[in-house]
Structure formats: structure tokens, C-alpha cells
Amino acid sequence: MGDEIDLSNRDPNSLNSHLGTLHFNDIFGEPDGTHSIDCVWKLSHACFNLWKNLCYKLLTLCFGCCIAAEWGCEFAYIAFYHVWYITPCFKWLEINCGVCQRLYAMCINCCMTPCFESCGGIFHHFKK
Image (tube, rainbow, N blue to C red; front, side):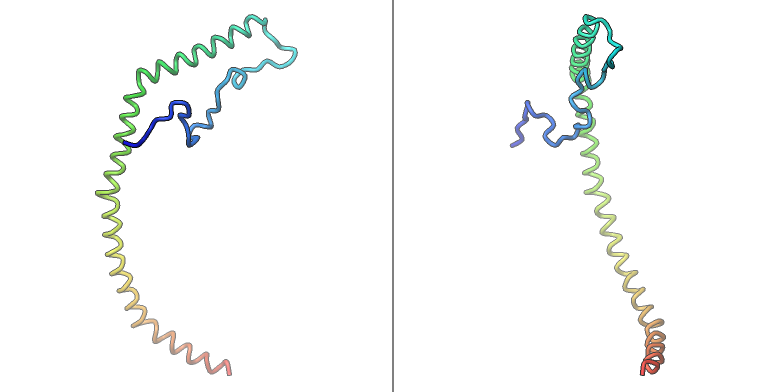
């Protein structure tokens, strides 16, 4: 396989850019006049970053490979379904609708075209 994994840029297509960087200051903020003790604010910042990173790493370690395998199976199923069911159904519809289209065109040409040509001939004389 020619796919190299870029370990520094893991979201090159910005699929999860809506998450942002999830920094402490993006989640918590104390307005002027309502501040906690400085050591509590610093410790909260450290705890937030530690637990956010630790929990994410534990979750990906425990479940990441299984979830990736599940999504791989899902997309394989979608590809299989399209190749072996949906595309042939569209071809079947295209063939049958082509026959219906030809039948409709024959009916219009046989039944409606003479009426339209007659009306056109009548109104053609009004033009002069």
C-alpha cells in the first residue's frame, strides 16, 4: 500500500475541525469580579488537561481498533451493496423506464399529435 500515515497531521481533511483544540480556556472562564483562588484555577487547568488527555488515550486504546474495524466493515458493506444491488437496480430501472418512455412517446404521437396539429392548423389561420 502506498498510503503513509501522517502522525503529526491526523485530520488533514478537517473532518473534526468543529471540535476545535478543546483547551481549558475554551471550556471554562471566570468573568471579572468572580474569580476563584489562583491555586484552584491553576489546579483545575492541570486536572482538566491531564484527565482530558488520559481519558482520550485510554478510550482510544480500549476501543479505537474495534470501532475502526466496525467502520471498516460498514463501509465495505456499503460498497458491496452498491456494487451488487443498487447499481444493478438502477440499470434495471433504466432499461424498463426506457421501454415505458418509448410506449409513452408512441401514445402521445398516435393520440395527441393529430389533435395538436389540427388545433395548430385552426389557430394558424387566426394569425393572418
